Length: 216
Ligand code: C5P
Image (cartoon, rainbow, N blue to C red; front, side, top):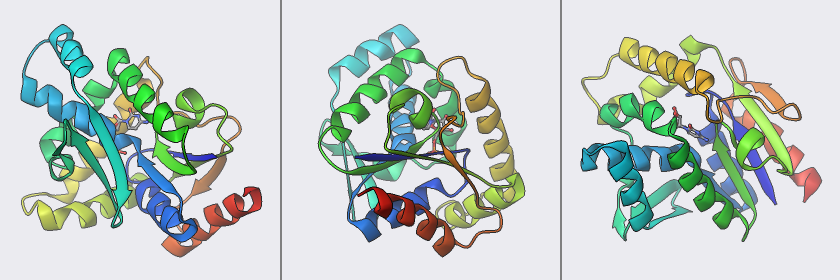
C-alpha cells in the first residue's frame, strides 16, 4: 500500500509524513532527499551531463528510515548529513529537471515501494511516479509561513542563513519545479488538498492518519 503527499517546499510534507509513519508504523520515503543526493553527486563530479548520467549507472543508492530520519547511502557511504546545505538547495531544481535523473530516481522508488507499506512525499508522486497510489494528498501553505518554517528548521545548522535567503530559495525552487517540462510539481486530480497555513502540526498528522486508517 502506498500513500503519497505532494506539495511545494516547506508545506509540511516531510515532518507530517514522518509523524504519520511513526504513528502507524509504516515506511517513509523522502523523494526530495534522493534528488538532493543526485545533486550532491553532480556537484562533486563537476562533469558534463552525459558523463554524469554514466556515473549514475555505476553507483548504488540505498535508503532507509529510522530514528526519525531518512538515511541515504551512496555505495555504502552515508551522505545524509550533506543533503541540506545551501549549495545543494540552490542546485537541486536544476538537477531534478533532467529527465534521466528523474528516471533513475523513479526506478529506485518504485522498486522499494513494491515491498512494504509506505508513505512517500515529493512533487510528482501522485501524478507521475505512483499514479495508482492508494491515497494522495497535496499539501500547501502561504509562502511566508513556509519560509518561516524552513528558516527555523535550518538556522541551527546554518548560522549565516537569513529568512530572506530561505524565502528566495523556496520561491525560485517552486517556480522551477512547477514550470519544468519533466514531471512538474502538480496536484493530482484525485488528491485531497490540505492547506496547512492555519493548521496545527497535530491536526495535519491526524487528518492523514484517519484517511489511511480507513483504508488499512
Ligand atoms: O522536498 P525537498 O525540498 O527536499 O526537495 C528538493 C528538490 O527536489 C525540490 O525542490 C525539487 O526540485 C526536487 N524534487 C522533485 N521531485 C520530487 C521531489 C523533489 O523534483 N518528487
